[in-house]
Length: 387
Length: 64
Image (cartoon, each protein chain N blue to C red):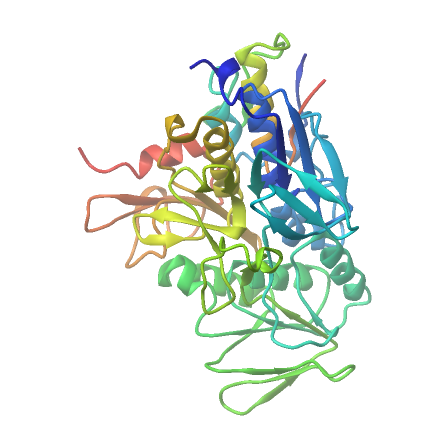
């Protein structure tokens, strides 16, 4: 079957979600030869944007306020923006929208992403997930208030870094050392040292409790000490947006409210695929969500191809790429994380820019570039198994 | 159409090279080099250029 013949029986595709997964899926459908009617539904009124930029470039005082913008779409879809999907009728093949309208489909691609996990219902608990969140946080940082950031993952550290650069006194409350769960002890130590040098106060706490009472936001750490600040931001994970699919039988239950468990091609059923942060897919470590930019892009391409070509579509293995920027450090990584033990330095050393490798017991490797410019294809080669 | 690089935005991730290795590469200093700047509409090259533009997380590439 040629690309032009792919999905010839498919007249209308609806993509729900206009983040990078939805946008890439729409592009990929066109690239695969789909020339029927394409509809993209987005809950946000904004054009698709780069989410990674929100917690990096966009928070700093001298920010380029266009850092998150992406080139305009070329997929020629009917775009319905600022309208959420509220339901799905899989028998009638219709998506129900918040404005009461219905969108019929032959194939459906779900890319509704995830939302910030919250610790309270208070509007004084800020989170950072979308562009509106980023602008709200940025506005609150004017004048250099004191800030409490709860969550020691990459997002929490990036937010803390942006707040410090904005002239704020910042306390980061983290379960254990920041970034240890994601990066391992060695790299987490490098980031924590850089953060402290720039003035970040780090509170390592077991079970902290958060109270976002208006005007009196505070955190009580595991030792019983109370930490107060003018601004409270939490970055404690994300939850897949699947509530609108209740009753469809498509949602795999999880303790945190459910996920779309797709097959290796991104399919939930022959006519419905999912990609991006809303979906978990089979990996070497079981069913996993990989809420990263590069994973959203790759999985969206795979899912789009599968919607048109079914089992004939390829199901490529893909090694996600991760990067973070905080406290003057820039890290790029490929391969399984977190990393145990000390690195092998392929270039540079412990005190400056470095290209590092960790070998894993199964022969695979992980490669990390710290303040070191290297194209991803070369970084991938660094972590290939030893022949 | 023409591939346009906004060099100050480029952070050297190199995801574009992965999407369109025949059109661009990062040199040994991690600077992006456009090996092909002009691509014909509707060709596989144009599709690769689109993919490269789309995968850049900092929108350093565009098509004109």
